[in-house]
Image 1: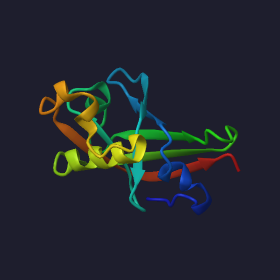
Image 2: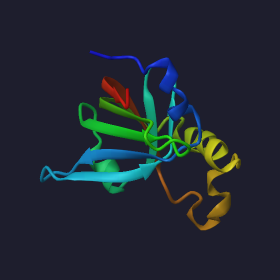
Image 3: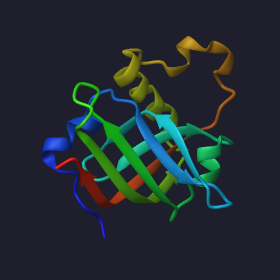
Image 4: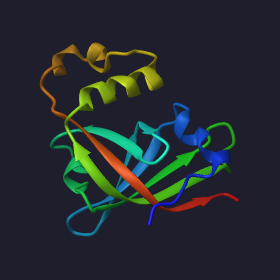
Length: 136
């Protein structure tokens, strides 16, 4: 069952804070990756390129955790445990560009690495929060 993100912690998803995404490897080992993230009011959204380890680990139904720590007050944090409910390539390039604008103030994700333009298939994952922990 989906749960809400507490209003007084939504800024940890809205601000350009690099979060930690934890997925599960095929052998059961946890795998942690720093990622960009956004929140649409219901789902936490992650974007990656096809073939990366987190892409291989994140299929619809997979369990994941997102951890965001306030860089200004490191004892303030938000842990979101959830389930992947959608995986799509449709709109994924636009999504990574919007994340690039948020995190780099640059609306073109590939501007810093032109050699990769057209060589990556981007994919967006939606995470439905099922459990939320905070420092409170």
